[in-house]
Image (tube, rainbow, N blue to C red; front, side, top):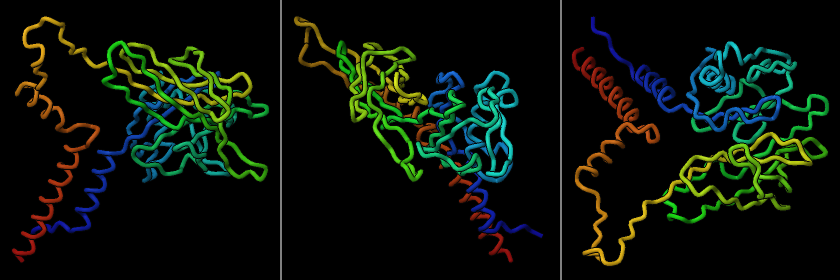
Length: 296
């Protein structure tokens, strides 16, 4: 007796493959000293706790498993309480439950909150466990790409810093963070946010990836994060007197074109290979289904 592949089974297989192929989130963690220990780290999202969902708990567990010395067993803990699934340990710190966690800069209700591919998860240990004055804040951009900047030029980027807080009725509101000093890779700069939280930041004049954050003398800020990538374009200026200086050929060779084309196949940013794989499975399964029907 031949087995018939049902449409429902095909869809279920495609759904499982899609989650596995595309579920990645960006995790940020700061410790009990207010230090940024994980900054927008791409983290594979899988169902670590086996509850059949992809949640905040899964993201934080997997981030610790990949990045903490000793893995999640040494650095992370969670348990169910009166208000749902909650943190008991973050980045190796156990303090009785004084933690915070946000998804896409909005306060999460529980570690069991479901999350999606591309979401940001920001978790922190309260540094002020008496008054809980730690203020969660964020930039208006998580990542900025300053590729192909002109050689010998300064790279300047503009950011706005906002704090997530509550009004007198405990409704969530957003307010600008004024007077915050910008840091680059942990070092203080002379750039300070204005009354609207806005600031213009000059980046170092060299290729690199820079972690931009902020500190304040008047508030206890949970470190915000913006990753800025700087790369300078190659200077193609031809010195005077060079033969054919008006006919500089910058077109790529055929070999370079082929290499660029090949490098795009299976790119993790586009998921082309994963989509093709899922589509292939669907076609094969559908063919099996039709063939079985015809042989009845």
